[in-house]
Structures are given as structure tokens and as C-alpha cells.
Length: 127
Image 1: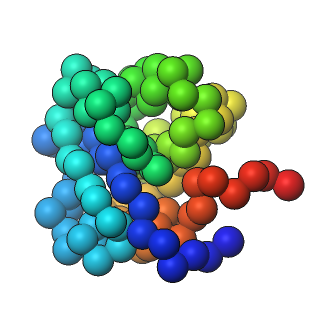
Image 2: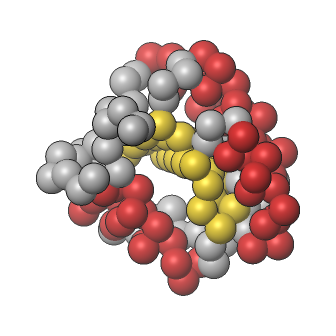
């Protein structure tokens, strides 16, 4: 479902990522975006703020899905998306089994993925 509402987003980035975390699309598409490096800082922000959507870049280290699972375990209804590199396609089903949405994409598709995530309604109940 498309919505005109702008969501609050926590973006857990990786400093070695191939995705442009400085893209203007964050400001255009979301109400508030907190960008964070590392597990401890991510959990600290997650615990002290209300985010509609959590986006984790696990394109460099797919093991980062453990942090996303920890967030999902803490708040089961939290909308979470993972960015996955094409070389890690085999991990998509495992990520989906955790209740986490995943995008397999190249750097050129990053802005398009953000547009799709921004249109997602994290509070719409699945039918």
C-alpha cells in the first residue's frame, strides 16, 4: 500500500558499503533518518527512539543479520529491511524466515530500493 506519510528510519550502515549513504533520497523520502555504524550504537538508538522502519546494510558482512534478528526479537512487529549483495543471494531465504524483508541489489538500484521502502506501510497488517 502506498502512503503519503513519511516514516522515521534507522539506517544501520557499514563504512565499507557499496551503497551511497549520503544520497539525498533519505531526506526526500523519510521524515527522520538516523544513520549509525556498529551494533552497540544501533541498539542504543533503537532503544531510545521510535522508528517506523529499520534498514540494515548487510552487503559487506552478511553476519550483520544477527543484529537485525536481535532487533526483531526485541520488538517482533518492527518493520525491518536488509540490503543484500547479489553475491549473497543464497542468504535471502534465511533472512525472510526471520521475518525480515530483504532487497538484493547493486549500488545503482539503491535509490530505487529506498523509494520502495518509503512506500511500505509498516503498520498495515498482513492479510
